[in-house]
Image (cartoon, rainbow, N blue to C red; front, side, top):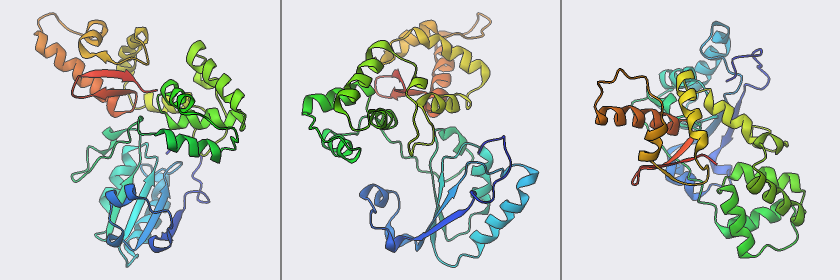
Length: 288
């Protein structure tokens, strides 16, 4: 839902498909919602949708009427939600026969929803055999041994979007892929340099990170800048981060109060996909 640019009715459309005709209905989807609970699946591309502005009344009313006039039970998929207005609109107007599945980099956008289940996709779930299959899909004919596959996962942090960019840039050439991986892991080239068109909505990961940072306040972004001195691929204890974290204080705060303030700010960053957290150990790591 970009704030700039005109409303595009040609692209802001509903994609309707029968769940019964969906062949690749994975086990993960069945964990989210049982197949027999819905009769239809509706996907809404939220990018470019001005649901919170006056110029959106026309398309907003059309969406409302469409949802209300669907007689069957259906699953509404909101892909890439970036605005709280989108959440409020669909939460208010969804019919009783509708279930909603939304994807977003910010869980903070959904605080206004009473009944919400959150499914966080972990970055380390990519397995060696899955990566091998993925490489073949991208045209790599040469075999990769387990050591090479493990290295690829470790150096990219298992970040599928980054792996996809590297594989696309390598164009099926194993040596080129290993060269790109070496450049990324040793020289720390800017993520902006690994740019190419893929199904991922951003041309490079820098664009994705900038979008996540837009969700933070200006003061919180300035505080987060101090984390640049930390090792990005290492888990950092909360106690270490608290030593460098800037706070506006008057000097009378207790230690527990200061820790609470820092913890709240860090959690806000985690909820907007900038940091990864290990809740049990209170360790944090840059999103890779």
